[in-house]
Amino acid sequence: MKHSVAFEKLAEDARARIKETTLEEVVSRQERDQIFHLIDVREDHEWQEGHIKGAIHIGRGIIERDIEKEIPDYQAEIVLYCGGGYRSALACDNLQKMGYRNVFSMAGGIRGWRDRHLPEVKP
Image (cartoon, rainbow, N blue to C red; front, top):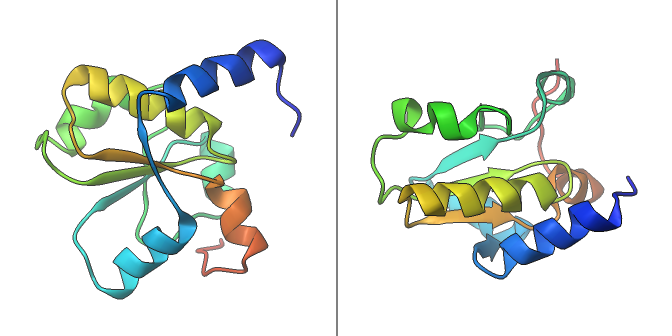
């Protein structure tokens, strides 16, 4: 998907302040049964088309409103993902501003996940 220059600039600005993780690191965490929260920040219709096993859905439009109900521990490890890593970077930046200290954006998003044919929950 081609994004606007302004949107890409906004996401790049957020990336300067956040931590990113790779697809491989997420797979490794899952294989080791490491405790972390995997959150899909895509839109409802995107989630329904398929998502990463073990993920929960809190859309980008409501994550700041609902995150504390879902994950009240500000030290919990949280990995966010979206389609390609832009929306998750923006959400990650905002969660850090809210006080979450161990939050990551998954670089490449679900498109990268699918490109590597990694396991996905489909309807």
